[in-house]
Structures are given as structure tokens and as C-alpha cells.
Length: 466
Image 1 (spheres, rainbow, N blue to C red):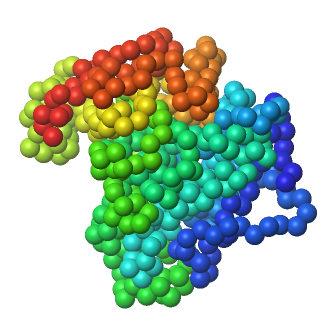
Image 2: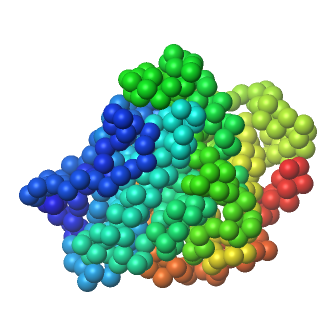
């Protein structure tokens, strides 16, 4: 391959790690890529996997020939660099590996691999006509991990020291690899960012079948015939599937015998050192996103109580008492605080406690207040702070966000050193998390020390209301 070199790193893009799953191979497990003659041009990324329009974290595409990966490595290498395999987020519906520029991680000393994998209806198809296709996106990632084991040394990486790193949908993929027997031996450490395995990472066969019924009816393949489904244009399948789903692999299969939560609870998972964390203000992003959607507007004070009742049902009175509007700057901030604690902080602490029972675990909270906002979007009605995805602006060159302010470079550098250091050793500069712990490491430009996470996020309250 011929790649490109700049600023102390070497980059190789668009490397096929599996054969194109096209034609009769649509919804088939990944197979090894064919060899190529001569020198391959590896200076451009491969096509994005098929995905709909809808979110800025994606690249609209109808391509099925998309199983490519990218490698960014330090220009100078002794062949013993830790390898970080990045699984992009996007709800397993959107995104590409090349969106996330890993130059800074590579400059810190890691060989970084990112990949495209089948998404949405193309990667998590629940129809019985295409049996075994419920977790193809995860199987694609396993194929990429096998490629990394076989080829990391050619890029200066240590093939025996591979860290799997993912955020949001990519983090739930890491949950899947922890639970999947097929991923055993393919990675040595794991980083989970904004992905509490205790409440996500899989679905039931019934849920997958119900989704497939809806899609097959829309495209006129009610009898679930594989021939009919494979003949449908990708655009028609994407349209039928919709733009805002949350696909997951199916638990109870050979790929994933146990749901991640059950695997962690019983200890029947791939036990590797884990770095797990959550952003302090996760749901500010979703609330602000509603404001910026067509027809959206900042939440009015009188809308707060109905919104809480809609979100929390029979627990709404208790939530309103614990999260009174008067204690927050706006209705949107109050709702975001309650949702963050219920849907992110509590299950992430649960996940860390389950992991710590069986394997070395470090937990953090990304808590920076002054984070970059989205490029090209109107200013929000309140500060996004450590919203969902905010930490990614510090790890990657990501066009989605405005630039990190120059005075935050020391904080960014420390984050990069910490993540690459964990990839190298499985340790951080804060203590190992224990099963009963309530304190975690708070990470911000102003503070890098222990915080009472359970108190700050009302963990006992949320456990009491279930």
C-alpha cells in the first residue's frame, strides 16, 4: 500500500478488511478480502456504509461495498506501539471511521485503526428469511479485529496489545464484544465512552422480528423471502427502515448468547481491563437538539412539568421534587439534568460496579464546562457543557465541532496521554474502581481528581424509583 505522511504520522485509508457484501452476499457474514496486484493507493477512505440522511454525524450513502478500514501510525516506530481500534458511534445507524481524525492519538504514540461496518437495516436485519443477520455489524467489527491481529505489526503496532475503544453506538459495540464468544482473544483492553452496558447493547429476537415485519411490509416482501429482500434497492430499504432507530445485535444467539448486562452480572464475558466513563451533562445535547430541529424552540417553564410526566410516568412527582425547576437556569437544563442522571449516570455506575467484580476497571466522568459547540449551528439557549459527544472534540480532529480553545490544549494533551497510556498498560493515574465505589475520577481543565459521583447524580434516588 501507498499511504500519506504528514506532521509526524503515517496514514493509510480505504484498506479492504473483508470482501464486499453485495449481490447474493447481502446480509451474509464477512469473508476475507481478496488480494490485490501491485501497490494499492491508500490515500483516500473507502465508501461509507449505507445510511440514511438525517443527522450530521452521518454521511448519506447507498453503498454496500463499504468494509474498509484506516490506519494512522507514528512516523517513527519500534514495532511495539499500542494499538487502538476505534469503533465510531452514531446509534449503529450513522457514521464512518474516517470522520474521526486520529492524528493526535497517533502522535502520542498509538497505532490507531478505524473501520466502517454495516449499519441499520444492512447490519442488523431481523427477518427470518436472512437468518443469522441480526448482528452483522458486530461480525464486521470482529473481522476488522482479526485483520488488526494479523497486520498491526506491519504498521509498527504490537498485535498482542490491542485496545477496543468506542463511544455511544460504538461503545455499545464494545459491550457486544465483551459479551460475544467470537470476540475472545481479539482485544486486550476496552474503553467504553457513554455506553452503559447494563442497560443497552442488545435486543430480543422478538424485537428484531417486529422491526423486520414493519420493514418487509413497507417494501412489499411480506413473505420474508430472501430473494425479494436482496433484490430491493438500498434506498428503498433505508427509507422503509427510517432515520431514527436504535438497532442492536440480538441476544440469545451464537454471536451473543447473553445480553451484555447478564454477561457482566454473571462474569461470563471476555475479561480485559476496562476504562469506562460518562459525560456529566449527556442529555443537554438531546434537549438542545430539539431546540435546533425545524420548528423547535427553547422549552418554556410551563412545559417542564408535562415533559417530566411524559418521560417518567408514575415516578414524575418524585422526579419533580428532586429536580425542581427553581434549582436550574431553565426548563431545558432541568429536564437534561434529570434525564442524564436517570439514563446515563446511574446505569454507567451500575456497569462499572459489575465490571469491577470480575476485571480491573477504571471509571471517569468527563466534566469540562467550556466545550466546543457544533460547527455552523446557531448558538444554544444554554451552555452545552459536557454534553453527549463533547469529549470527542478533544480526542479527534472532527469537523462536526468548533475548535478546542488554545488555552485548553494542556487538558487535551493530558486526556490523550491518559488514553494512550491506558492502551499501553491498562492503568491510569487514578485508582482502580472497586465494586462498591461511589467516587470516580472527574476530568476537566480545572479539576482532575476524585468526585462523589453517586451523590452528584442522585444515584440512590434513581435506584429507589427503579
